[in-house]
Structure formats: structure tokens, C-alpha cells
Length: 392
Image (cartoon, rainbow, N blue to C red; front, side):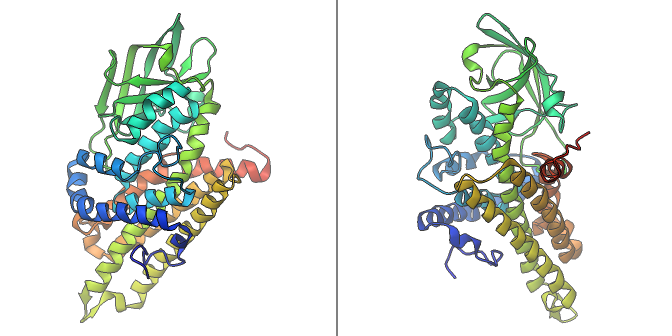
């Protein structure tokens, strides 16, 4: 077994990584284990983000590895997914932060921005000099975002005026820019804008007292007559179909986050059962304990093998949106099961933050919901296999 192997990777999915990819991921894991794992519980308890990790993660190439303009080396979808797994294995909030920065914020600019916007923003975002957030969800609009967006954009000459509110915006309290989606009052189509967060009329309020992903700084955003030049509009975004182009790429990331969080909880539970002695024996020696461990490992294996196949199909250009939807719905549901079993394995200590499992147990609830609920993703797949839309 090489130094990169994880015992939870029971079917050796990581063997599909190149030596260069394994080297980069090993460096990421070493940093996370040494400098991040010791601090996450404290930051989770205090609902604070460890800002000191941003530059090291940028130096390790975490931000934007899929974009040719900024990636450190040519890499596979398996590598990019495994990097999210490594972050989530330590803490789900860290993977969520990276997903917002890379997939949603940088991804919006890459897929929908002009060449000038890509050249202006992506290098600095990859270096961690600019942090982004993604303003789509609204207080009264979540799963129905395609129809339910109420934020507005009005153009007069070369100036746009933005108004509206957004909710649950990751990185929203401290981002430098916000990719803001609003309906153009002229044609009722959704447009995207890169909004500097120091713009007059832009405000962000931290959402407090969360029970999940407490390290991520979610915010309620309010834009009141924020004025932007036409140059800040995403030039290749003219309808919600363009917004969906971004979301179809990020949905896959959630499967890898689900894998990482399952592994993190499983590793903590396994170590606990091997060390915890009851009735004169480690509890890992009891049949019912081994049953839950093996069921957890089975869920992890199913998640990893599904995501490996999806990664391979992505590299071959064969992945379709419905596959990503199925993966998101399935893997996050399995993650819910796994972290619940791991919490059970740790017994009364399973609700004690110091044993890690409680954090994974709580954080999985958010991952199960965001980027499309299980129900919405199920209906996406259901429409594909039956030919009948059943959304309403």
C-alpha cells in the first residue's frame, strides 16, 4: 500500500490517478492533515472561517484546476474530484468554500464571461487574491430558480442597475466579487453580472446560528440600485440556460464532497471502535459494530465507483446532465446514511464535537440539500428515463 492510499478506498479507485496527480494530491493531504485538521473543530464551534488557509490552498493549485488558463498541469476529472474529496474528508465547509470559489464563481466567468473577463479575473482568483461568491438562491426562490428569480437588472445606455436579495450565499460575507444573477426587465431573461462587493448599494449580512457547515460564511445579500457598466455583465450569459451550464459542472463536485465526508466520518468511527473498550474488549470486535462499519464502507465504495465512472465519462465527453443529477441524488443520500451509522458507532460521544463525527453528521445535511435537492435531481433523471416531465 502506497503512502497515498486510503483504507476507505477499498476498491482502489485512486489507482486511476497519474503519478503527477497523486503527487499533487499527497501534498494537499499533507497540508490539510498538518495545518487544517487541528483547527477545524474550533472554527466550526465559533462559526469562523480560517482565512489563513486561502493562500496555501491557492499555492497547492486547488482553485481552478479545470481551466487551461490557470491550471498547474493538465489533469483528469478524477484528479479534480479527488481534490474535493481530500478537502471534504477534513471538513465539508472547506470543500464547499473551494466549490464556490472554483466551480460557481470562476466557473461562471469561464463559461459565461468574455475573453477579457476571463483574463482579468481567473488568474487572480486562482491565486486566492480575489474571492468570489455566487448569488442565485433567493429568500423565496430555491428549486424554482429558473422561474422564480425576482432580482432585476435594468439597462440604461451602458449602465445596469441591479436590485434584489439573495440568500444562503457561501463566502458572501467576505468575497471580493459576487456573480449575481438577475432578470433583465427588458426581455425577462436571466443575465449574470460580476459585482464588486464594495459597490455602493451592496450589503451582506452573515447568517448565524447554523447547525450545518458552520465554517462557511453564508450571507443574505441585498442590492439596492447597484450600478455597473456593461463591461461587468457576463457577456455570454443571456438566459437561465447559461446559468445551468455552470450548475451542471458543479453538481458533479457534490458527489466527491459526499465521498470525502463519508470517509472522514468512517475513519473517525473506525478509529474510535478500535480504541474504545467495553466489557473488556474493543467494541470493534463485536458483530453489530462490524456490521455498521461494513455498511458504511459499502456506501463509500458505491459512491467512489460511481464517481470514478462519471469522471471517466467526463474526460471522454460522454457525461450528460442527468448522470450528474443521479450521482448527486444518490451519493448525498448514501452520505446521510453513512454519517448516521458512524454517529451511532461512537455512541454518546457521537454528539461530542471533539470526536469529529458530530461535525460530519451535521454538515452532511447541508450537502444533501444544496446544488439541487434529492427530489429535484430525481425528477431530472425521471424525465430522462420516462420522457415525461413531472416537476409540477
